[in-house]
Amino acid sequence: MRIGVIAIQGDISEHVDALARALEERGSSADIVTIKHKGIVPGCDALVLPGGESTTLGRLLIREGIADEIRQMHLAGKPILGTCAGLILLAREGDEQVKKTNQHLLGIMDTKVNRNAFGRQRESFETGIDLPFLDLPYNAVFIRAPGIVECGKDVTILTQLDGMVVAAEQGNVLALAFHPELTLDTRVHQYFLDKFI
Image (cartoon, rainbow, N blue to C red):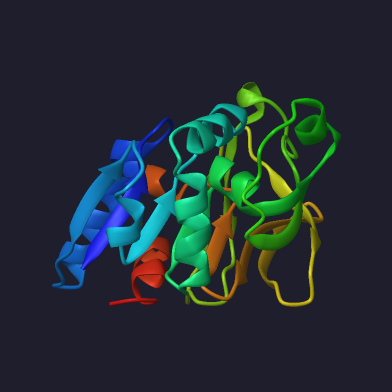
């Protein structure tokens, strides 16, 4: 079993640590590999697109030849988790800010995103949210967070905040506007692992 974490930019080590803790808690094992170049994604059973600066991430995914590999992974039905910038990159369409910066999107999820739905870095916050796959509320960390403003019919909305979708699922893809890797609560990573372990 091999889990890839896109390691071009963003919360890479935090996701690696969170996945390792989640695997240990469930008594499972998997290789967690960081990905900076093409050729590694095809050998992975699951993939994480972490937070970071989405315009830079999108540009580098194209330049390194990783974007098409991620699309192929999606077509193969393998689980993909996108957090914060990852949620933006998974979308089919972005807001005016995304269009203005000519940001590359993977177009994997039938969603339209607002890149800075919850304000700038200084307006970051934590709040409890309810997720249908968890018994108790989850303390979500939002940092310069995006939001989903439109969902296609095949997208399942998992939770909303201030009228914005902040967690959604479509088939094998899970998109979160918040950062589950920045807490010690592994329940969201456990839910992701449930998809293939």
